[in-house]
Amino acid sequence: MQQINPYGGPFRRFSAFLVDALVIALIGTVIDLSLGLPGGITQEALEAQAGFPSYLKLGIHLIYWPLFESSALQGTPGKLLLRLRVTNLQKQRISFGQALLRNLAKILSLIPLGFGFLMIGITAKNQCLHDKIAKTLVMKRTKPTGSDPVNLTH
Image (tube, rainbow, N blue to C red; front, side):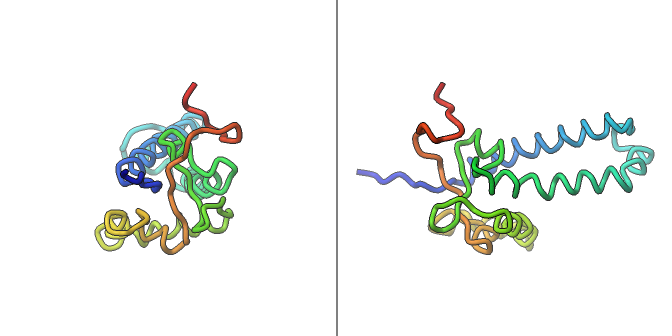
């Protein structure tokens, strides 16, 4: 009998990231539109992004992942859609501080050439460098239960 790997694999995790990148992009677009900023990649548009709009977007970007990952949901909208959750090594909910460390450590996962992300293929628990640093796991969600906040079977 083949044992099922309980950890989120690279395809599922990358797909979740793409969903979250889309959500972040939509939030940025709403901010731009509400502030009446020009769109596109023109000199005028780039200059309009300086100052408050860029700080606001950076703040949202910095708290998006930690806020969702440390919440009762244990994952961002992308992770929920792909049936993933972030846990500590004891498979429990992580704190906001641990989630913030995990996400700031993604900068190190990019250096050099994204090797920290590629570690997912060589670690027993599919951990990237930032997961190792923050002592976290990305787990597949098990069958939905009454207490599961996201039930995708209906």
